[in-house]
Length: 336
Image (tube, rainbow, N blue to C red; front, side, top):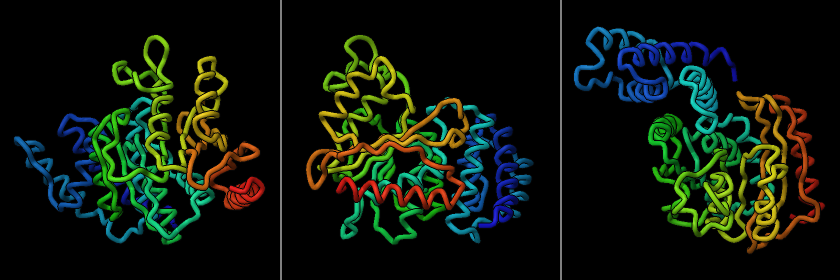
């Protein structure tokens, strides 16, 4: 992919978004969703006289210069990644709302292939904190190269993020079911997922009344949302289902983690903890890791040696290939 090919569309879409943001007195996220929707509909949406005719004319002049139809899906994903980074710089959402870098999707795809080798049935993948859908879309793109059939579901309680996810899915021609709900209530899915992927929000869950049936609820006060989401995900997964969670790298080193460690080593199979490079996320002060869990049942069993490794530089193809080879060797040694 030629990065120069997406530079001009990025600059024009960003400029149009800034114009609409100023005209509507809204945030960048909402203006970006509306800009992309306008481009798709080939007209500027006007409601209650906003934006003004002068702004509509200015936007139409910009829209005439933007051509996204000739971009490949890979190029569109790269363009959307740049726009999401721009959103994060302008709106400064808290860390729990920020989009997961697309490169993480490649690592999760490698892990899914490691544990889910049967390609005879569609693979059902759910992200309970889907946000803008960036993680799901990048995983889907990796599997598109392999022509593996997927059934994708995204859940989130933030309708602004889901609105953008829906627009991006349309551009990518990505079949995905998006659901606006609290992921700590029962998931409204037609079937139990084979895989759950989640960049977990870290912090306290405020609705104590909904935590009563959770093993990982706090003994007093608010419970950790990321603990509850791990439990909810694993309980919803099919037997032998795979849970891939992006978590703080020091998850099990914290004093509150005793109950979590006991739960993941008795209720499910703890298969791995992979440290991600420091520079993957914008806030590189918060080191992240991928927690690999698997449900009991099916053909699943506990690995003899829990997979502990450092994920290499995601921009280094040679190191990534070596890493994929290491994962395969681990799988063979542990009969996964």
